[in-house]
Image (cartoon, rainbow, N blue to C red; front, side):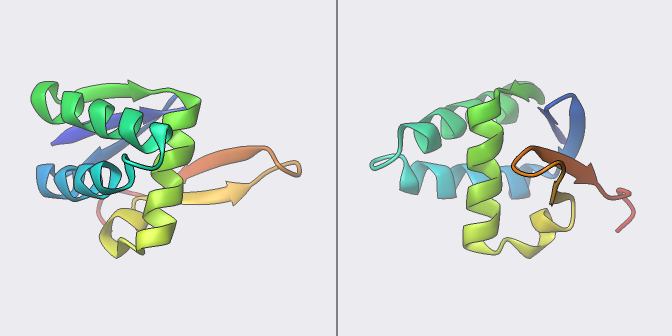
Length: 96
């Protein structure tokens, strides 16, 4: 299992989910430095199991998940707006 720490909350993904997310980030990496940074962080997570994402990487992860409609990953991470433009991750139980 791969654990990503997003703004002090943990999301657990299967290696297959993390690899699909990394592939999407690599694809976008030629036009987006943020996507390139996320791809590198996901590569690190695949190699070592756990990684803490910076805010820009967390935002990019959300953008990719929403843009690509990665349903099985979207089930684990939901974005909810809190206090206007301030964003917070809401984690669903891992049994879903």
